[in-house]
Structure formats: C-alpha cells, structure tokens
Image 1 (tube, rainbow, N blue to C red):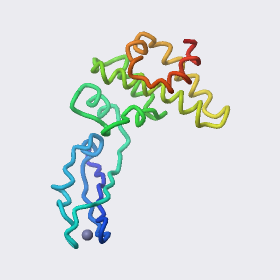
Image 2: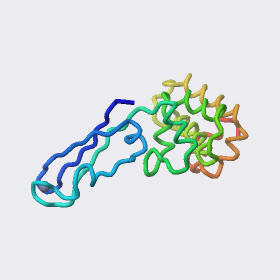
Image 3: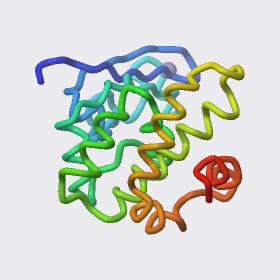
Image 4: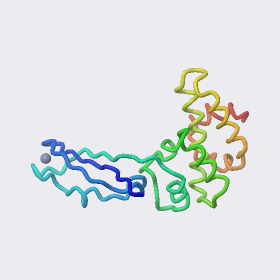
Length: 169
Ligand SMILES: [Zn+2]
C-alpha cells in the first residue's frame, strides 16, 4: 500500500491552496488530521475557514474486511452504504457476507447496499440499462433473505418501497 492519496484545503478568504498526501488506508477511513497536516489557519491570511477535499480510493477486499470487522472504522461520516452500492464492490460485498465473521451492523449495511444498488438501477438508469446486473443483485439478495430480514430496520422505507416488490416481498 504505497499509493498516496491527496487531501487539499483552500482558504475561503484568499484562495491559498495547500495539499498533503496520505496512505490508501488513511484515505479510505478518513484517518487524517487535517489541522495537523495542513495547519489550523491559513499561512497567507490567517483565516481559519477552508474548503477541503479528500481523494477517495477504490476499496479492495482487504480494506473492506477491515471495515467490516472493526466497529471504529467508517468509510465516511455517513452514507457508507451509498458509497458501497456500486457494481465494482459487489464481489467483495458477497464475499464478506458469506465467508467472514463480520460485525452485525456492517452486515446490515452490506445488505442495505445491495438493496440500494437495485434501487439506483430502477430509479436512475434508462429502462433496460443494467438489467442483467439488477437481476443478479436481486437473486443475490434473495439467496440471503435471512440476512435481509435482520437488516430490515436499517433499510430506508423509500428504498424498500421500490426494491421489496421486485424481490417478491
Ligand atoms: Zn487565506
């Protein structure tokens, strides 16, 4: 893991720009102290208001497993399941659900992420687009109905409304 990921901060007052580089793991879990790396005030004008950005790495199985087994790690402050609801993460999600002793809460989030994938395709893709992927995800969810039931309270009702009928629920 030698790849480096960029964080930036631009002063809201004078546009002074600073950047620093962090590891993939630090970037994935936002284990980064912006103040320490970039200072608490603008070097140029002394202002303390900034706009920040963080380059997000693609997650790999190793990082996702660490996330799924450690209650203290999160991928973003919120909306982790939205971030995971991507085709590229599907194999990792299934691998974690089936073959690893992961935390209950993270298991619920992974099931939620699968539902969000179906929701996103249904709502945002042109009709017929990604139909194969949608069918695949639906069958993967149906293979794990027990886990879906456990995750039920986690899943937003607007997601359920669109997704559950497609599961035959
Ligand atoms: Zn400034």
